[in-house]
Structure formats: structure tokens, C-alpha cells
Length: 167
Image (cartoon, rainbow, N blue to C red; front, side, top):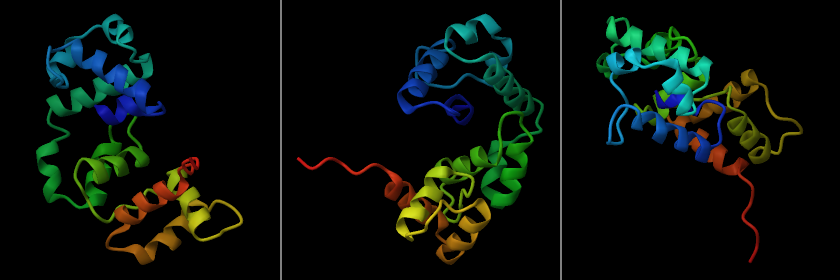
């Protein structure tokens, strides 16, 4: 759910929406169950800051979990590609979201999110490239980082962050 809620939002805004969204269902900081989400109204979700489009994505996710098409408990035994295939079957979850889930929720060490502009910008800066590499070029650059491409991606994100001002 967090992956969908955080799409295309700055961190502080996404965290505020997640807090209000969770509060719709519990006093605790926990996501709703699929049945709780499916029973919620569009108005309640909108009041929490969830867009109509994201509400649809969240409902599709909840439906796929509740009817057994998506079983997060089985993911540990699956390959990265198989997990990504299951996730991208959910409306609103694309390759980038699947890569973030693999890296940050499953802790997979060899994921290279070539669709991430921060990773590609980090490559441009680190390797002194004239232009930001395309996803295909990024895959070639990152190939030598295997089997720890997730770690290489973290370094590229750091390399692309603005430098702290001198004090």
C-alpha cells in the first residue's frame, strides 16, 4: 500500500497522507486489511488525501490479496522477476514500484531500477557522462555491480543528491 501511496509525492506529503489513511482504519500506525479497505468509501479516502486514481489502485491491490491472486507470503520463495510479475499485475504498480518493493521491503540485494532517474543521474555524475544514460545504458553500466546492484543503486542515489552547503 505504501508503494502506491508514495508514488509521485514528496516524502513529507506522502508521510502525512499515509498517517491520515492509516487513521481511517485504526488508532495504530497500521495499514488497513483488504476487507477494511474494500469497505471504505471514496469520500473517506479522498478526505485522507488519497486521489481517486490511487484509491482505485489500492482497491485493486486489496481485491487481489483478498481473492488469493496476490500472496505476499509466497514472495520470499520467488525470484525477483516472478515477484515483479505478480506485483505489476496490480493496477498502478509498474516496474519502478516493483523494484522499490524488492529492494526496500524484501531486501533483495541485486535489483537495478533502471527506470529511476536518480540512479541514472548518479551514474552520469559518477562516471562523468555527458548525458544521463538511458535505461538500457544504465543496465549495461550496472551489470558489473552484480550480485549487489541494489547497493550500487543506493550509491547512485547518494551521488545524485545535492551537495550539502559549506558552513
